[in-house]
Length: 388
Ligand code: CAA
Image (cartoon, rainbow, N blue to C red; front, side, top):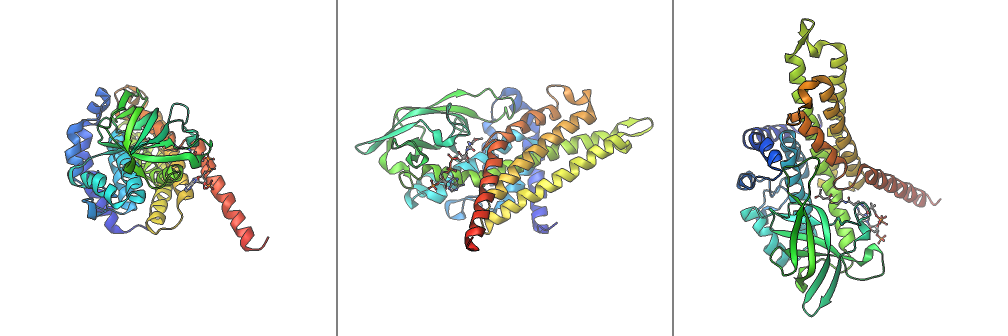
């Protein structure tokens, strides 16, 4: 393994925390279709709500590889908690830290570090999912306030969270340069968190709509420059996709661990299932694909830490690890048969959860688009450099 031994002891610490504090309530959260807010102080204390936040603002400032390992380990026992952490770190903390002014960081990031406040990310709209540039929400400057109108859907953490960073169209030329982003406090007049989404999986995570009805956002809550919102959010998603890859990996590893234990302890014809060739080959394929996906996710994380381009690798990591997670959940059901198909079984939960990793933060098709476009640009750059 090319990653350092210190990361393996870090993994062991997070695994211990996840198994003792999160696993026991994972089924209950899914059964209640709601995130258990009593978990937040524990997550905050363990540093999991501020993994990528600099110490300067009270965060724990782990590197991206540690962040990926932590999301992987938490998702191994609970996908719903995995997405809660991935969203509040990559999608909440990152844009504010990368594009905010010092005043904005003091006002909105310090509460994250000091008391575990959560920031949600408002991009997707009923008519603008994969086509994020098709944002319809509008923002008009009136006096010292931006007036926002529109709705966002499938937003993670808005009910349990404190603030939202959301995009809106500040001009009407019709392209993505019209989109800007804003920091919204839940108490701002005209803003509300709407209907809870009734999801197939990750049912223990908080996902809801947002509504802006002549919502009044102070002028100084514009994030970065006017017209930069689309690029800011695309850059945010480049990083976020590493954590969704880590989730796919963790969910897949969870499925593997459960069905490998099952195969070791359930005999058929006098020997454990794990020694039957058809089952053993399934386990080998799962382990192989998990290990390969792990290398992709960790490579993207390390490139990000080294400030090297990583958008192609994070799209590859997310694409592959979420598909590998689905493969493992599918194969685990194949190995365990009727012992896995009960709706309340852990494997059934993983099977439902992992499908969402192929959708959230860009579908698998969007990842293929990002990868192929980046490669085309790289080839063009090489041709230009060669004077062709
Ligand atoms: N970094 C920096 N700039 C970028 C960029 C990136 N990664 N991607 C695009 N841009 C820039 C381009 O350079 C371009 O700039 P110029 O015009 O100045 O040259 C501009 O943005 C427009 O780019 P494109 O022409 O590539 O834009 P597009 O409209 O063709 O869309 C897309 C590109 C990749 C399809 C994009 O719309 C996309 O990623 N869609 C998927 C959205 C998504 O992932 N949504 C998930 C929502 S979050 C979520 O799921 C949250 C949750 O809580 C689970």
